[in-house]
Structures are given as structure tokens and as C-alpha cells.
Length: 148
Image (cartoon, rainbow, N blue to C red):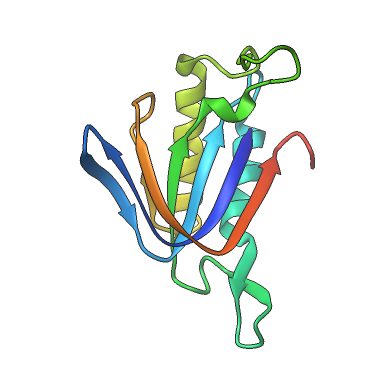
């Protein structure tokens, strides 16, 4: 799995001009599920999201977690994170999991984050979505469950 994690002051997802998910302070996570990903990949990503200390404390250092700031997660499926642009000008998505395999792992990741006591909102899996956010910092972190 690959994740792009953005610290936000607010974010929302719309489908057909209708907001379907919204958070205030928290993390917008774009998540791509790769072929051959397993529950262990979902567990790694969920644990990192729940415990990552990327919010500023009183000293101005990033040492507070999502839980510490009472934040939420907006999790959005994005298979294009697995696009390979090394050959030609059109990305190849052959490493992306097919939707019937990706959706259960996406939902498993949601459930695992929720089991950490954190609120999770999601986009609509497989839909064409508009994502709006205010990236605080900006802070953007890349995670790859295969690079542990």
C-alpha cells in the first residue's frame, strides 16, 4: 500500500458536487492498494496513521499525534498512487490492485484506524471525486507498506 498523508486544518470530498465526507483538523490520506497487498499492509498503514506524530506541540516541534489533537482522518482511495511513469508518457497502473481486491483492504484499513479510537470519514470507493483541503504547514508524508 502507498499512502500520501497530509496534515490539514480542514478537508472534504465531493461526488457530483455533493459533499460526501468532511473533517476539520486531522489527516487527509490518499491510499493506493497494490497487487498482492495483505492485511499486514493494512495494519502497518493504519498503525502509522494512528500514531504518527506530525502535529505541533507547545515547543513548535512535531511531537503530537492525531489522538493528541483530537483530529480525524479523511481516507480516500486513489489507485493512481501506484502509477509507473518510467516508460513513455502515459502511466501504467498494472501494479494497482483490481477493485474487487482493493476495496476490502481499503475498508479494512478504515476499520483498523477506527479501532484505534479515531474518527474516519471516506470518499466513495471507485467514484470520480473532488478533494479539497487546506494543508497545514504544509506537511505531507509518504508511506509505502513495502518499505518498512
